[in-house]
Length: 327
Image (spheres, rainbow, N blue to C red):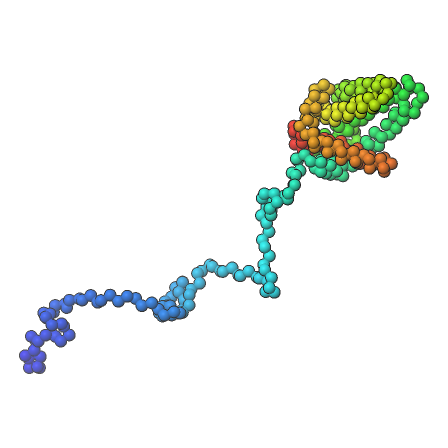
């Protein structure tokens, strides 16, 4: 012990017992204390002392930079519901977004599509068709009426032949112009009088008329016998003539469109019409009704009906046989 009362051999009270002087006391590991969750609403009390992006004062959440929440949709507070979204495009027929039941695509054959197409084409370019129809009707009056009213058999026969040739000549122009419209070219007045393949048209007209002539001769002979048999035979021959005319209706279109000869055109027309007999019968019946209305209008309706017939026939021919785009 020193004079000051200090004993150097005495252990420092700040050091644990058993520790030599100058020796570091052993470090004891503190028992693990799990972190305490902050109380609800108290988020990291020392957050307010931190700095830098992403930190906020205690009790607040930091809003991510660059993010702005979208505003809530505006609902009708009067008790209604928000409008439903529009239906998606396309879809099966009869469901939202799809065509309804019975819808027919515009380039698929139907009577409504045929007449609608013809009307749109005529409406877009009417005057060449009106002028050509006027010339056609005028020619029938000039060459047809005198032959029918003549007392001379020879004169009537000649007038009938001339009228038929002029009719075929003008029909050539109508077929050519109708196919031009289907191909995308606008018909002009001059396009009705170019007379392409006119020789094959005349031959085809004769071949188509031949069965009708034969049927007429047979019917005339049967009338000499009179009786119910003649009536039945005449009816059958008349139906046969109508059926042949129906099957031959696209002969001119095949000759004009595909440069066929008359015989090949007749055969091609029969084969093509047979693939769509039902649709073509309905189209013929529709135009029969339109022709009747044209007669009731003192012939004025023919200025629309005749162009519609050739345009609808050209469209039906192209849809049924293919061979090119439809404009």
